[in-house]
Length: 180
Image 1 (cartoon, one colour):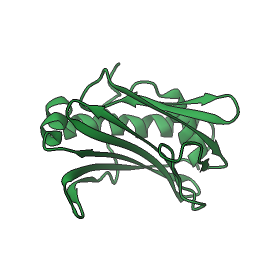
Image 2: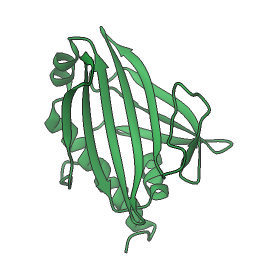
Image 3: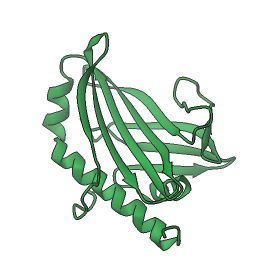
Image 4: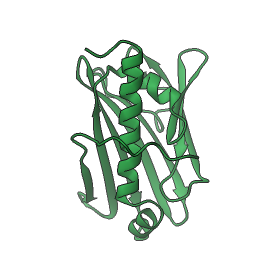
């Protein structure tokens, strides 16, 4: 897999590394980026993007999200769900969830990597008619998580990939005439 371009800055990107309430062994890593494009365009960009993670269209308005973990590039995850009018129609309750109707689309899956359990969540949220917020959440349990994460991909590398995602999404939006 090739790395995404590092020539874009992530505007308003945030990082959170904290213990979840009541769960001292559980940590969470959160990244956010706001893309100047509607959710449908971001979905198109994700379908085109195959270097970090991808959203593949399947028959019957189904989509598959696939990508690689931050700790082991040979480990892949996949979740299949239905996507219609910017909402997820729950098909696998334990693997694909969405809010009932506020424009949030969430993809999630849980997998094992070495001695820790990881959960990956992609959330697409409407921040305005022409702006979409993309949140990438990595959650993990176990004392080895911090060592595993930073030994394989540090925050700087993750910034580069998220910046590439933002750049790619906005490029797709421009090419489709969906930016002001």
